[in-house]
Length: 196
Image 1 (spheres, rainbow, N blue to C red):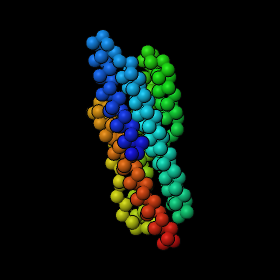
Image 2 (image 1 turned 180 degrees about the vertical axis):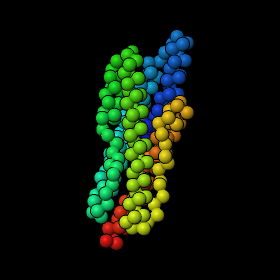
Image 3 (image 1 turned 30 degrees about the vertical axis):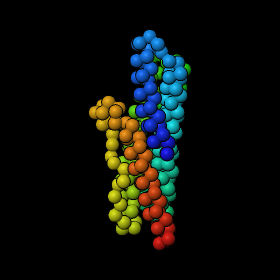
Image 4 (image 1 turned 90 degrees about the horizontal axis):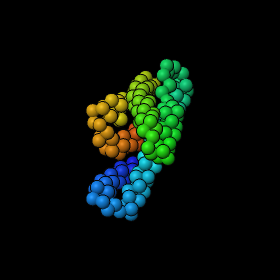
């Protein structure tokens, strides 16, 4: 079971347990064991997903560097250098931690959400631009028809249109798409090295 699936499954389980815990609170007999299990599963889910988000940005940035190296080797000038910056992720983690420590202060939750949306925006833009660069480079340099693997997404469609319900599916799907993209690109790059 990979981390994306683990995060999604534990998130769903902790949500179900949380609903049961709230039902018990309203009935006047809360089970602290159930509350502790809910917190534990939620913490495992959150840590798993935080690692997945970080892996996305690191792996994409490594691929950007390899793509830039390829363009420099073949003297192709690329105007764009799409990277997923670290600062939105770090701010997101910082405000998640502050919100965890000071649960009653809503501003931390709001800032956590804002920086997560900024992180996703950069992630989606990097994916879009990187795939455009791959299409251009592979067609220009090697006459290879490259088809984008990762679907184009934007933050508005993820959060506003679906109200976050779609997110659990998207975590797993986007992880699969990024892995497929990196695997396919790695095979293409290795084939190009053999040809050269």
